Amino acid sequence: MIQEPHKAAIIQMFHVHKYYGSKNALVDITLDISKNEFVFISGPSGAGKTTLLKLLYLGECVSEGQILLDGMNLSRISRRQIPFLRRKFGLIFQDYKLIPTKTVFDNIALVLEVTGKKSRLIQKKVKSVLRTVGMEARLNSFPPSLSGGEQQRIAVARAVVGDPKIILADEPTGNLDADSATIIFDLFKEFHARGTTIIIATHDKELIRKSGNRSIYLKKGCLQSSSTL
Ligand SMILES: Nc1ncnc2c1ncn2[C@@H]1O[C@H](COP(=O)(O)OP(=O)(O)OP(=O)(O)O)[C@@H](O)[C@H]1O
Ligand SMILES: [Mg+2]
Image 1 (cartoon, protein in one colour):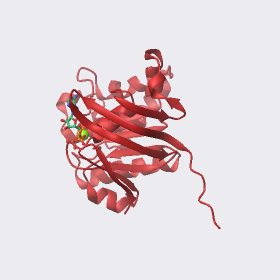
Image 2 (cartoon, rainbow, N blue to C red):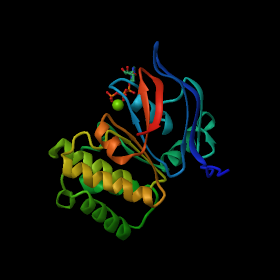
Image 3 (cartoon, rainbow, N blue to C red):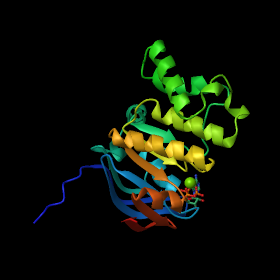
């Protein structure tokens, strides 16, 4: 009998619930995500996709249940350890969360500055990632002067510049035209090929279908299915 190769989990969720007051945003979620998996979280608006991502980077704490991330129990992490945990992630937020008073260059450079990278390397890496997302001409612009799609591309650049172990992307192509979405998606595929785990929350069924990757489907906070189309 041929055995399935063992795929180590990078994320394990056990009977996770999340309440916001009396609202049960996630209901009894148990799932594994493997190291170097490329997986989608899908489901209608309000299903709990963003909430699930927030629990992983400790943007919110679980109400019940447990999450193991790369062997760490997130319920046992001290406040001091949180910045180190976050460095494992490249985060792309649904509302971008760029710093409006810093230039595009500085928004991205900040990721490398906090880890003590040398200024010359920072210059090189930031310019290179901006070229990849087609935004090199805007490095001195401030985020409020950019369109939604342009800000989204900067948010993607910021998420990948530090070569994170895991990319968590919340609707990363929601505001992009088809060509820009393809560039961003190809960039994720490149990181995936280099060993990064990619988790994308999206409504975009076409994107999921084209990729052929596993999709975890949420509805009203419940895990409905987890399948490869
Ligand atoms: N901070 C909060 N306080 C109270 N309720 C919240 C909060 N954040 C989310 N919720 C509620 O939890 C549920 C899940 O929200 P969440 O943002 O995770 O959904 P989503 O699947 O990401 O939706 P969308 O596709 O619209 O982004 C929703 O009913 C939402 O109103
Ligand atoms: Mg959301």
